[in-house]
Amino acid sequence: MTVSETIQAETRPLAEVAFPEIPASIVEKWQVIVDTLAQLTGVPAGLIMRIRDDNLEVMISSKTNGNPYHPGESECYLGSGLYCETVIRTRAPLIVPDALLDPDWKDNPDVPRGMIAYLGLPILWPDKTPFGTICILDKTGNAYQDVYRRLIQQFRDILENHLQLLYADSERRRAFALQQERQETALRLSEERLQSLRGELGRASRLSSLGELAGSIIHEINQPLTAIVTNAQASLRWLARDKPDLGEARDAVTDILDAARRAGDIVAGLRALARRAPNRMEAIDIHEAVQEVLELMEGDFARDGVAVTADLRPGSAFVTGDKVQLQQVLHNLLRNAHDAMAKTSHRGRRIEVAVDRTATGEIQLSVQDNGCGIEMGGMQKLFEPLYTTKAEGMGMGLSICRSIIQTHGGKLWAEPGFPYGTVFRFTLPEAGAAPSHRLSP
Image (tube, rainbow, N blue to C red; front, side, top):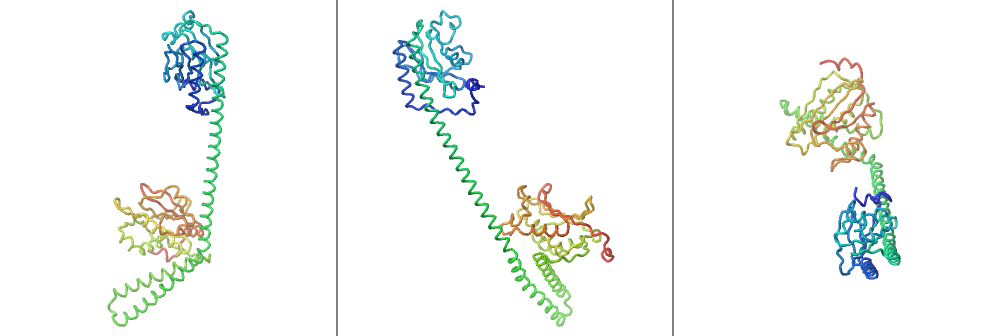
């Protein structure tokens, strides 16, 4: 603890003390006071000493002949034996008529400078924290008459009055700055709240029009899908009539037809979800459903160099649900995993799909990528409507996926992958014994 802290501990904690600097105009007045005091008392040295951390500094020194002290000089005074140390510690006046004749003072540090007589008073801030001292010193014995004692006391009172004014002005400025800071903080919080409300209003507006948007998208998609089916059927008829030997062409067109019909099923599932229509519940081989989605996305994975591993055992796990909707969930999770690795190249792009049975007997499906992962703050928002990490995303995919899984009595969540990427998992109640045709190899 510094000397200042030791002294101020008797008044209030140092952290609460914010004393102002002494302006030049006040310093000039104090210089006149010290010069006048030294001249009226006929001594070589008049001083105003100020505490600076552990040091006692000569702040102002009288411009008189024989004065050995100079402004800016300082000394660590705690335990030093200086006259001023006792004045500050006791907060009381001190008179030493002749240090050479006083065993308590004959060895103090001012004696070697020739200053053997001392009269000093403490200078206090308005809160009674010591500022320093005002003192006069003589090179000869001096008992200092009462008139001199009253004179130095009057000058000390003037100094403390100046400190009172400075302190009050500083407190007013500090209070004003604090009030201004509070007002600015309140204004900033109000602006942030207003911005937040605007954002919430915008999201509410987007949500309110989502149903209309979904209906429009479904209508627009159904038209080209219908055209695909019609043209594929026509192509099959023409190929069958003119070139019955082109089996490879027939198979390709059949694949187009199957894919188009499947796209129609997906759109129908989305329409049913938007309208909250009853789901087409049936026993589903979850392994078989996963395999169908992987086959559908095989081209995208191969094109972008994504390796997919899946331990699938058809006939080993069944759930009850709407197959199209559940496959749409899986398709969305696989698409997100694919997109999450767009900037991953140095460690390869891999997706792992696994189907397990939990300790409570539920079927759990997981999709893990080895992309850059998602920050924890974003992880908690993934399933909020309109939240997205994609520049072109609408932020509805995962929200809809969670709604589908919850409708099927399950749970959907995300967690960090190890050592990279993100893992999405969902659980569904097991359907129990599967139909006989489902169990056939």
